[in-house]
Length: 345
Image 1 (cartoon, rainbow, N blue to C red):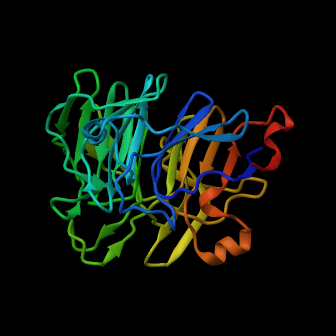
Image 2: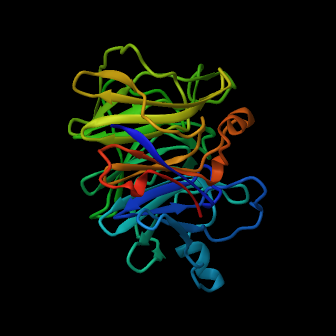
């Protein structure tokens, strides 16, 4: 039986952060929350959630001399991405209100908790935020986002070969996905499935005529080609700033926001890539309130969801301190009562 099984309060208040699961722990990087100072440049913060003890810890700041800090340790930011390859978390992109967007690649060693900046070559993507990042083998794929220098949405695909540390701009064939930001891109097999995001009716430049497409776009990494895909019904509403993950070869999405409808979501949908069909899922238990800009990480057969922001009406209805809550969605049958509790830390 699929069910929401944990509602844990007292975590870090975070919106537009990036998170990665490493074993039984979830590492959360940066983001922002209301009331914090984002004018002062400082190191990105790292919070770690232990899914066994159900406790948060904050890693101490890295001790560096002034000239090393900007080079080796990322500054506080939002709209960035983080992915795991072996024992290294690669953090890329995002922006800060003082420094703007960034295109420096940072690496975080999960064993030593040390930051470093790998030496890279090739065609480095322009600084941006709201892009997606996903991993296939030893490569990281960056798609979309809002480019700072060009001041427009992107639909480029960049690939980082983490063995040689070489960036390349993929010359994709076929009909590409529309320029967009705050979408999701998920690897299933050798294909990248792109859903949602914010686009503009008139192309790559932002004219405040936002559109929210709900069609799945598929990129084949073996042929470097965007595939033709059928229209699916029923489908989730178009949205941005949602969460997406893959479980047993199927794509799941949760939450998000549609500005044209002025609506936050807390619905859960499953997409089968073989049948190319969506299905709305109704888990048991008390789920999260509608929200956007949250993070979802898979730990075993559980999805850990935390952070985000929502409308005041939804917060009042659910009694949910959106930015500080952790929710767990149990994908497989629970073996004990450990994950069937409501907890406050």
